[in-house]
Length: 288
Image 1 (cartoon, rainbow, N blue to C red):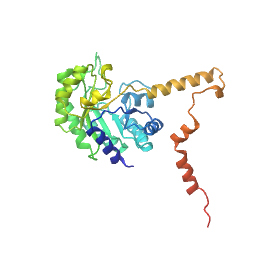
Image 2: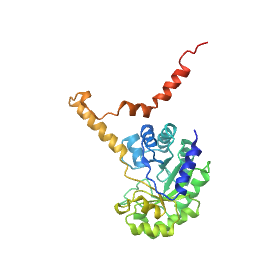
Image 3: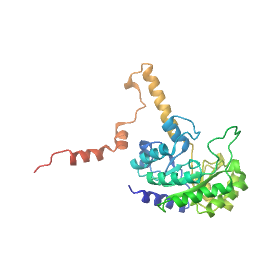
Image 4: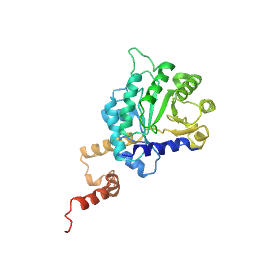
């Protein structure tokens, strides 16, 4: 697997002047579809992975091994550079090191490590952040664990929890520690982004932009190179499955349902031509 080449492609995006929206993916098929449509990268969010693997909400119930296994299946089946949300690194700085090792071996291109205190503590009324020192320690641990220098490490913080000044201070500290990029979640206004862009050099990643910042040219001008959109793909797939099974359960004629993918789309996703070639080459007797 050519993991390094994918990471270099994503580094080129981050070093560029434009902002891209990665495709929200949840399995090999969705990643192949995104790749065929020309997306520059895929995004595997923690919430999506939890729903895909456990059918559970995003409450840090998914284990590192489960997450890494899903990421590997996606990376193995599609050449799309994959960005992954590794939450808090599944524990302290030592756990972060293990997470980086596993995710690097799984083939991902970019790993975000956030500074939220996770999982939710007893009696905790709202999410809190770890200390700046602990956040920096996690970034340093991630960098120390990285074997392939092309793997991209992004420190992540939440503007709505840290405040703009606090988020800037954390971002600057993570970059000073060696992080390749900073991911900001919880951004609320154009003014907040302007303040961050004035203090934090690109590349900046955003966990979704406010409605008045949906324009990619505007985001790019503020140093944003990757901006997430809502994770709609798995939700859409679940809606289609529910509608199909409901109709069948209620007695609908399967031939009357127009929700199935076309044979040509399915053949492309499954790469049937590649397998037909392999069958002809390896499972067919050749003349002597």
